[in-house]
Length: 189
Ligand SMILES: CC(C)(COP(=O)(O)OP(=O)(O)OC[C@H]1O[C@@H](n2cnc3c(N)ncnc32)[C@H](O)[C@@H]1OP(=O)(O)O)[C@@H](O)C(=O)NCCC(=O)NCCS
Image 1: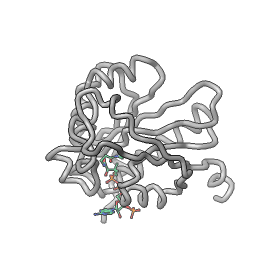
Image 2: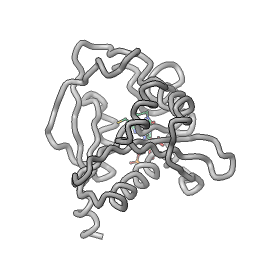
Image 3: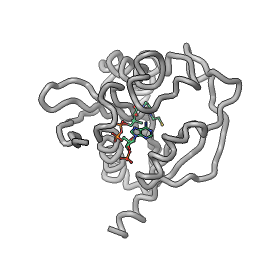
Image 4: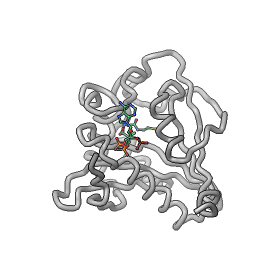
């Protein structure tokens, strides 16, 4: 399959980007449109995954950096990811990694993940990247393992109260924390 990741450019989102981020994240995570992609959380959560207000609060707090990825030629929003880092911490957390459902499986996700990892290393000098996935999303966990992530063994229940408008399809959903040891790979290659 052709890898067209190199045609993506990115910038940091501001609070004025919340509406477009909201559409992208919700369409890729759950609901009808998400079925166009190869993996989604549609069987686990009822939409919406997030809201523009939630995204506004996250960006406005200054604790999250959202990276938005656009086609270099067409300038269309194709993917995003956010990073969370606390001053002095050696860990950055990645979340809301999303690629427009009709544009998945072309290498965009891998590209966005690697840019986010590099952003965290270059800006915060972190040693680890962490992310969380639903334990039941085996295909997604396998995807991250192929990217070098390790299952930490840490588990917790998904805090569904954080979803605001959406909800979960089950009473309890277990979340798994995965970890990427940045320096280990830097030393190996
Ligand atoms: C997860 C996500 C960001 C990946 O983006 P993407 O652009 O499709 O990813 P890539 O093109 O880089 O990689 C596609 C991978 O999926 C694999 N894949 C494709 N179809 C698949 C299928 N039906 N089953 C399992 N794996 C499949 C490919 O083999 C490739 O992996 P590999 O390179 O290790 O072989 C995207 O699917 C998405 O936005 N999903 C919805 C939101 C979400 O769940 N985000 C993650 C929350 S933790």
